[in-house]
Length: 128
Image (cartoon, rainbow, N blue to C red; front, top):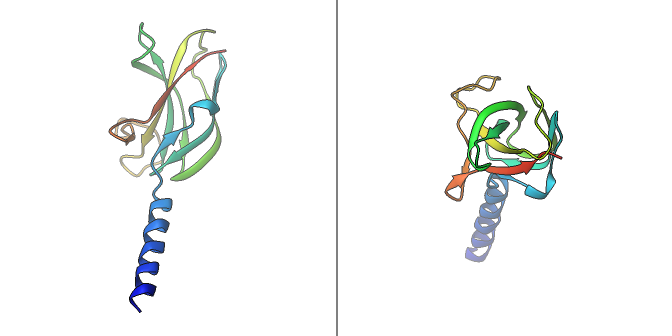
């Protein structure tokens, strides 16, 4: 009886861990053009948004938001984000995952960056 209980507990734990996969953006799946950023694979712990930021002069810190698209909790594939303003070829953009913060259906200041492994879930991409 104890063996069956342990096996069931282990199966439930593994199932729970799989259902709560850590938020990630697959770096090798991002493509950026002057008008669109496409992310091939993103995993979100909660519903939210993939947000594209311009970068500062160093190309490493997020600046103004230039586009966003909704994502659902779990695995998301081929998320396309249309940019509000064209980006220059060779410029860097930051794709950042934000979590829905106030249970509405629009991206706003309540939707804070998602964190995983102690840092913000983001990737830098160069416009091609």
